[in-house]
Image (cartoon, rainbow, N blue to C red; front, side, top):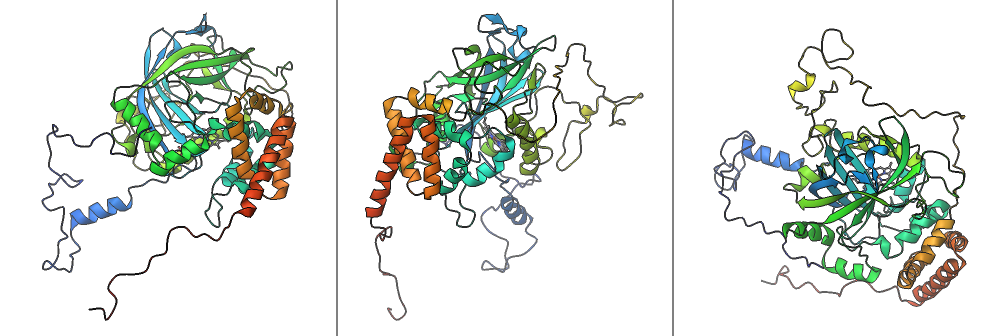
Length: 529
Ligand code: HEM
């Protein structure tokens, strides 16, 4: 594991040095001293370079992401295999990004943690974001996923409350697991995700050694407009590595940016990380033979029934040159799909699709899509223009700058033909209502996951849960033990025993120890001279 030494040296002696200028292009001759009356001041007000320098500095940061604020990223490419397993990919999707074996599509990736602030430790027990933006020949395609393959909740309505519970206490600003378990104990569908999160799978060792997954269910649409359900999975060629809590603590004591540093340095060394993209495919429909709903993101699709089929690989071979411009301002969304793809009715996916571009209009600005990292590499022709910092290419008007509306008989942009893009048209016959889905099956897969872990992973899971639950209210403890017991009797029993042992230890511990050692003031005091 890399130490916190100075990474990727900034000393580039071979680069010709250029003159500093103001942002208006005038050379700066003194960048050290304010303009003053005499060399002790007062300072004058007309010092344009100082005023510009300071006021720009005052505005340097954009708001951090409301979730996934801490992250890093890189650029690279996706190479399609042209097939899905043994079959031609066109059978399932007409998306051009997949056609033509060996075709490469440029992309960028941003990895992240979820709950912490922008500079928080990368050793947190937290899902890791795994967001990919592909600049395809047919416009941008984003897979905004996580390292884990499932999620805490299955209905977007619950997301803001969930995040509030996971973030620090709003009064004290102190993180408190009791708030998280309070929410989770009232949301039994989270039992499966909690089982992963408190195991070593909750702290990936680095970004290079973790899986990625789209988590939500999407659709693929073929030439005839026929759709199948699809899930995406990224598998790291570097292998999967996770940390125990103790290993994470040791790294965190020395380095709060170990994952960013690891990714950056590996790419600088020319060790380009690589992932293979797999899909799972399911016929669109209710699937009464399954004990879960295929649109429920708290569930894994069993691999024996829905095998992982390889469709391509991703290589990251280029670091950002400007973190703020290329990574901080990068804006991903679940609505960013290309022709040949569609939305399923997964209730999380639909809720997310509103949230991403909505927050980005606020976080980055209404013209966030014009920034180089977010703009497609294909031509954009749109009548959605103006707004702050609009610097769109005037040619986007489609050759007639007078017509910025559609339809028109005298010029401007025209709709594309449906001829080669036969739409997928699902039909519905049901009443509108607010209700949970059938087949919640909140515990079945949680129990299976628990049993499938290796013993060291189970031990770690029990210890981490016991430590966190030991400080919770008894009502929360009882509800959580009940969930774990319903998932697997042994699971519930071991957490209960571990938690009670930890509570005893806490009781016996003296809590009157202040951190640090007392010091006396030894500086100059009045009268000491
Ligand atoms: C980031 C909302 C569920 C993965 C974000 C952001 C918002 C958001 C507002 C910040 C975006 C930005 O500022 O650019 C939601 C909502 C969800 C949800 C409302 C549920 C209803 C999920 C799920 C996953 C996920 C299930 C994983 C599959 C991510 C990732 C990012 C992110 C990876 C960071 C993207 C980046 O690197 O910029 N989410 N999210 N989210 N979300 Fe979600």
